[in-house]
Image (tube, helix red, strand yellow):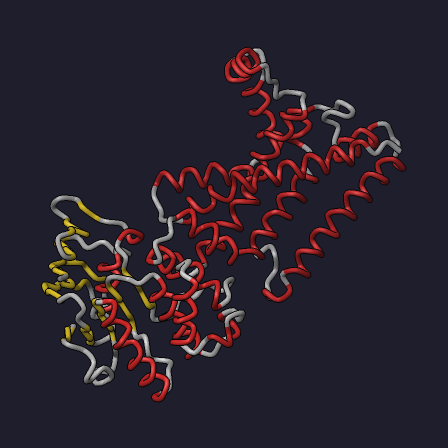
Length: 205
Length: 223
């Protein structure tokens, strides 16, 4: 169970706005997050990952406190075991597809499985510049899965995929995430994109 | 023709560049991350060699490392090291004099990388050092090369600082730029021309090499 109660000031075009979230996420659940641009969806994911620090509140995962403003607890991003799929992919231009996964894990069998899952097994030696948008996005997802994260945070993870690829990948991801009991939060601009998959939703206004 | 000033210059430039690669890179990385008044002051200090007359810098280094008092005396007594009129003094002065040429381009390049690259690495459990070593550094290679070559070339061209702290001891501190000056003073223009031509050729080739390497970046190495 993830317990989140945070407050973070956002810089908005028209003055300041405060992001407030008070929510629990059951272990292994899949939640879709949607709302208008600038409402703090990405900020919220980054707060969970430990990449942005909120001003107030707590984040507790099972019995472990990841963040507690009052008690000055703030577990660094490296120790949170979250996976983050960035909206702009954030792939490493110097690394090939395989090197991205090897950077994240030393488990060779797992790397092979992921390459097959993302249909990138024939492009192992390619660097991101030589991949299509959809391939880059799949690599970003695979790299994140490579560490077998406890919490998977995905920011518009399927935006560059065609309908067929998206359906196939989601079908495989469903099984994989269930197997690993990964708690997943997915930001999507399309409220219907994850119909039938997500257990719950969180709407930002 | 005595080539020792040329070799000495190349040795000085090589050692200075190497030291600045080790010292300047972590420094540039530290400066590239966030802003604070302290960082602004430190950055201003390391930028000073760009704007100060080299003779001013050389003068203060001469005072600071004079074996007669203060820091210089202490270094001499405790470590038996003398920085005035010695090759190690030239190295120290060159490192200080050329530091903005290494730190500036590397810092700018690091700041231009998308923050998400480092963030992605952190969420994979990688430390800041691993992220710097395996993600950030390999992705600023052209700027790194530019910085190293500029540092090397700048050290080749040193004159004022070197003259103040090193003087002109043949084989020890008499680098090529000093040798040119000495030759002109002795009205040996042929000798001055020889040293000048060699220096000109080396720096020209270096700058051309950087331009060629960075051709695909479509930008000037000085940008």
